[in-house]
Length: 230
Image 1 (tube, helix red, strand yellow):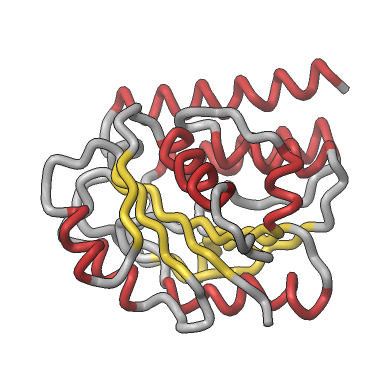
Image 2: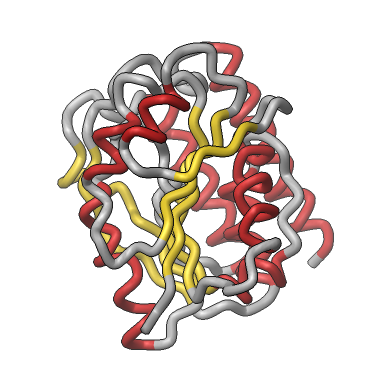
């Protein structure tokens, strides 16, 4: 039986987190919500919905993901697959089965939920987000012959392959770091088109000019760092 765990980084997602947890398929063994210094009811609502709740006081998306991985590393029985999912309810958690199927059935290492433009709710991605995704994936195609079309946060990866990536980014570069290191380690990867809707609440990244710029700098920094290493 395939063992699946979900890691959800969350910062002030009190209004959405229970919706996310409740829509996760029952094939998942454990849902881990990592509260990244939340000041609202995120932690309480996540616990009520049945999730394991961890607290990471160091701000940053990557820090929260690393906290979840550290928790799993201390468990006696390790999972086969880790799924990363945002806590804002913009993704459709029930589509998790679509992401893990290629890993289970076809021995794929890494699957990204690609936010297909035909499946996106109007306004769910800002113009800077759309452009940033296009630029980043175009550069990865140019430098590394990659076939990525998105940096979507909804993703599934074999646990052993995730550990081998030695993830280190603490903030917004987490997703692109995973994709670049996956290319370098020649992981078998694919993308699955997923639906995407307007998030509950305000984005901490695309919702602010500072967040959008910082995220863009981090993402491009990782790409150029790896292009130099080629």
